[in-house]
Length: 252
Image (cartoon, rainbow, N blue to C red; front, side, top):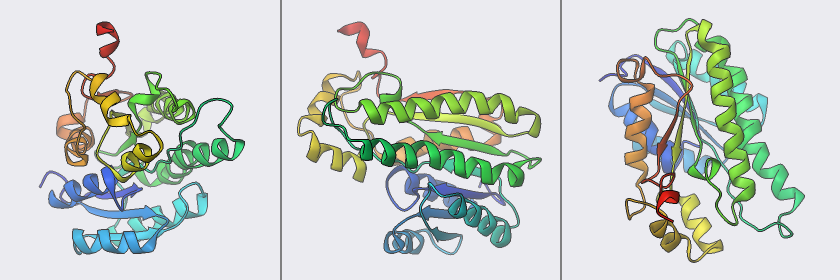
């Protein structure tokens, strides 16, 4: 019960990695507020998590949604200790096929949403014992992946924000870190497979550990960084959890 008494907001928490992180936090004593656009998915997630979970419906790219989520955590749970910026949008395409609508959509969710929620959460997090912000990025933000240039650009932006905000928020007692997963068996991965039928075999070829990760194992690393005892001396880190995807270039 290492998160007993802790309160968390998790964007994109209704499924995939976000839900797995929420489940891990609840299992270890935290109370969580999940944020996503689809109320049916949120309601289903909360029914699985039990009475220590609730939700806020809204567009994560909007400050109004972020403010409502932080207010919900404070009013329902007495404060906010942990923020997990997990929500993400993935669209693929080569240059020449990428549209400006794709640009706006992905930067809106992946970057603007991260800024909106961090802005909204900073005051509530400041001065809280063990306060931490965790961003979920992607190995595509650190190594080029054909067809995912725009997605990778948004995730690279998130990684830059993590390291800058770690400096800016240190004097407020807020740690800021980033998980950078490789291919993970999530709904987003399934969507990407439809756009890129060879995605899984390409992933296996370009990883040292020849499989796709599960959301639960990514979540275990997330909890390690969020926990003050195991991650308390870590801030500004970009933690690769990608099966060796970053290192495979040395074998090419």
